Length: 140
Image (cartoon, rainbow, N blue to C red):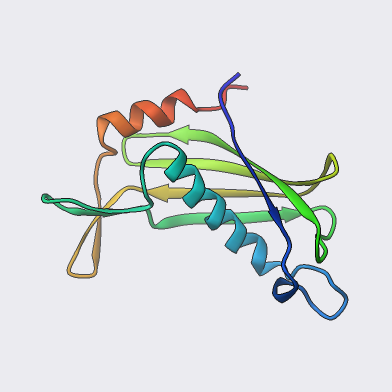
């Protein structure tokens, strides 16, 4: 089985409605927050500028399926699994779990792009990074 990236996060009051239920859009914010933590865990960032170029990972697809509400003060167990790696993109799934119950499942695809003059051009994922992503690829 491939490796997974895991972290926990508490639902904040500002992320909820008057009933104390987390607004659906905040699941996407948490997906991005978890992705950024994932990149840091492999020694990278979602946005890198070096002497040669500026590289980022714009999302080309994002979805979230909801099964039960997350509420104020819930501690969410977040599990990110890399599900696809190609020459220029990677996809992942993210489970939102509270007390062993899956509340939601998010899916995202991001493309490695060179950023120049506010323009995005897909580029090959650097070999060392692609190898690391492939190590984490979930195999069913």
